[in-house]
Length: 129
Image (cartoon, rainbow, N blue to C red; front, top):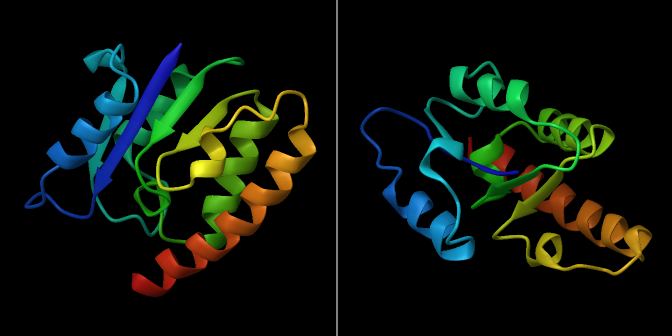
């Protein structure tokens, strides 16, 4: 099953840009499979995010527009990404193009490239907070 997650920092911000990008990437994405929060990314104690994690199963795919929409704490973001990996959930981040590539059995290459990119982007997201 394919799911998506979107987040903005407060109730005054609009999620539409993220929804459009998610639907453009995966046109068959069902509205009921898109979870969103209007809350700070400083931690993962977000209602919709926690609900999303409770429905994800091994083999599912999660799409996020930008890494900093997942969170703004580098170590916590890395822990969440590890949780997804350990639970067999594929994470695709639209602003991390290497997460969109099928490395055809060369998973070690994908992991190496993604780890480097995510380390840099997560550090930048944390600094922006």
